[in-house]
Length: 305
Ligand code: CP
Image (cartoon, protein in one colour):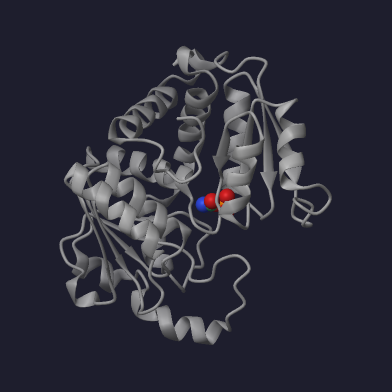
């Protein structure tokens, strides 16, 4: 793996090894304290973040390296200097570019014009590091990842796209329950379908909630992505049937409930479920740190892990 831009870069063995490494790092972080000694990463954020920023910065620190946070929220990237010039400058100083960006094409441009690995920390299309932590969490709670039945409910956004990608490659069965015209990206879905066939899993998209039965995992995310200014009443009307509440959890047979956070309590998930016995949302948040450590070590110093 040269970069992590989409999640399609890894095969099943790659995902499994990365998650095993994250579990080993979680169990014994002290053994990895010098893995990235003297190395650094630029953390380029065009959008706000709590989990991703904190855990990438801590991941570098925990491995003996250093993260340099670049606040690009004022729109500097590609304006103050071109994206390729950002990549060329930063490649002279740091060993990795971690980018949270508005457009996937920005990450592709950074990767094409820089000379160090680029990691997608969320774009309009993908959130691959998030779903790696999510499948690690599934493995911790259910004991396996292949054949696990995951129902994603709500907006077919970047997280939904990435769940399809990682789930397909890990041999899981992922169904996105989304309102009409709110499904995941069609091209990504089609590519994920080919991966699912290869690995014995499946991916589906439907708006029919009557088929939401016998799923192991329920997963949701915000109905309003950053930058979306659709009126809230319109959003609620469209998505409320897909809310994860106690009644929906009971009828689904789910063993765990997931949310990548931040949550909008009372919208995509109720307090009772988020704070209830099946919720693993803060395990997911914790595992962002361990998976980012594994990811950065694998990309920057593979011979050490
Ligand atoms: N889940 C996630 O990416 O959280 P942040 O937006 O806080 O980084």
